[in-house]
Length: 164
Image (cartoon, rainbow, N blue to C red):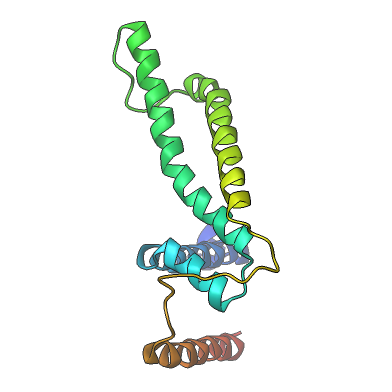
């Protein structure tokens, strides 16, 4: 009787496995995002990873744009609420979200234009030598972490192969 239940089907097992894998990957990503300063990561990628300065400064610009975009959306919502004469809702409704798209797009395009001019003024050509400050250096703990992480990956792969 227990073998005929929905929980015993191969499809259910596959679904649970995929769900748990997604949760595990999400937790690893969340841990990385919560413990890593994005500015330091971009600088390290530019100096040690060979990320072109144009991409690096574009990422810096995007990191500054996102909070400004949220603040601009809140200002637009507050201005519209004042015009209507009642306080804004805690969460915007779908029609209100749709009406925010064009003003926020215009704001983002203006900011992108200013960022492009600033990057051009900095002379972000691929051939020019660049100096970068506050770049993290490799520490001894990094030299321990990389082999340990690779060893864990190999152990996980071996355990999956043995179990599967």
